[in-house]
Amino acid sequence: MSLIFSAKRFFTLIAAMVILTPTYAFHPGEPIPEEEFEVGEMIMHHISDAHEWHLWGGHHNSVSVYLPIILVDGGLKTFSSKHFYHGEHASSVDHKTNEAVAYVKGVGPAAGYAMYHEEIYKLENGELSFEDGHVHGAKSPLDFSITKNVLSLFMGAVLILLIMSNVARFYKKNGPVAPKGLAKYLEVLIVMVRDDIAKANIDHHKYHKYVPYLLTIFFFIFFNNLLGLVPFLPGGANLTGNITVTLFLAVCTLLVTVFSGNKNYWLHIFAMPGVPKPLLIIMIPIELVGILTKPFALMIRLFANISAGHIIILALISIIFINQSAAWGALSVPMALFISVLELLVAFLQAFLFCMLSALFIGAAVEEAHH
Amino acid sequence: MGLITPDLGLLFWTGLVFVLLLVILTKFIWKPILASVNAREQKISDALELAEKTKAEMHALQAQNENLLKEARAERDAIVKDAKETAVKMVEDAKNTAKAEANKIVESARATINTEKTAAIAELKTQVAAISLEIAEKIIRGELSSDEKQKALAEKMAGDINLN
Image 1: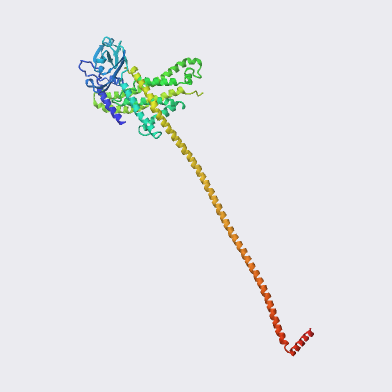
Image 2: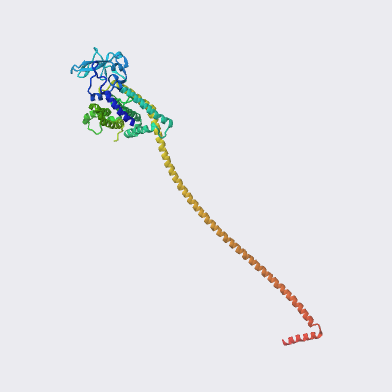
């Protein structure tokens, strides 16, 4: 545990120094200006996805792991993101604001594509045109790149498999005995998901079927939340604070709920018992929207909580750089440490909540009529 | 890649990884773990039940033992009492028998003594009679040894008869 705290502090300091000058935002040919520290931009860069895994350093001496880019654009195209990050720096004039906007054109195998704010565009007429700060007219190829988040996703999955197979091996080897080692710690969580989440919310005769799904979703979120708190390579990506991931998880719960729904569930949506017929005209749309708002809330809750944690820590560390004085570390480091500890709680809590609410929705969908 | 715009590539990879993870974990990990945990819980509850049952059995056995002990004690008491009574009775019987025997012996002794006495008396009588006869004979002889004496006697006897 203490390793994570101190590592986080270490990381945040390094990260904040690194991010002083984002790698993609300088103009070639110009002398490197004494850029002003943009807190918002730094934070946004850090909680967003990227095609590289930035380790340390800035500008020309930055050290990154360049991740593979996979594009589907009239065939599969794969190449390293190095061809963007070490590509040709270009700039165009925004049609609306008349300000110069910098972007990078790919070189070598990436020729013909350009990257602006980590989004890949197909170049037409050899350059991108901008309107009101957004790329105008250019098409994006389908981007299946192994981005930072995708790599983090893989590592998270491998971590879960490694740890869980260790636990499963223990039980296979020893049979039904008191748990030892890793199993001792993880069994508590597994039994918690089974008893306090699944059994407590879903009908006693039906909950068995949903336990594997709930366990998977719990550990997927929990482990990735924790990985997000680890400041260096195996972690640090804002995976569970990414709207795409939370959207997918919420959709999974939505699908499980909808396909588990029994007669009683649909009856309550389309013909709420005891409600006068004319009222149903209002009730049915409300209930239908209700089906969607529940997973929507799941999606937003996880996304917002995890992103907020990352943002707060980065913002606290930024205090040092805004004031350009290491003395401010006396304030910002303890605060960041406190929030880091809090984030450990949040990592568990959000996984628990997502799982709990999923179980609640499933439980409501499979509930039998009581009256 | 905006903060709140879903990204197709990431969605694809997330879906792929999550579904694979769900399948692998369910099949190879959750099932054996849950099976083991359930089996263990079953084992524990069975063991607890068994312990409870054994306890009840122990109680029953203890009560049974107590009863047995009580019965044994009662039996022992009865046996001791019986033995005591038998002993007393035996002593009594022996006493009675001895008394009867003694009486019988005394009785028979008495009878023998009486018989002996009678016989002795009879013999004494015979002896006395014989001796008396002898004496009488000797006296008569003496009395009749001379004519004077025979005369004197006859006179005396005649005198006696006169007097009568």
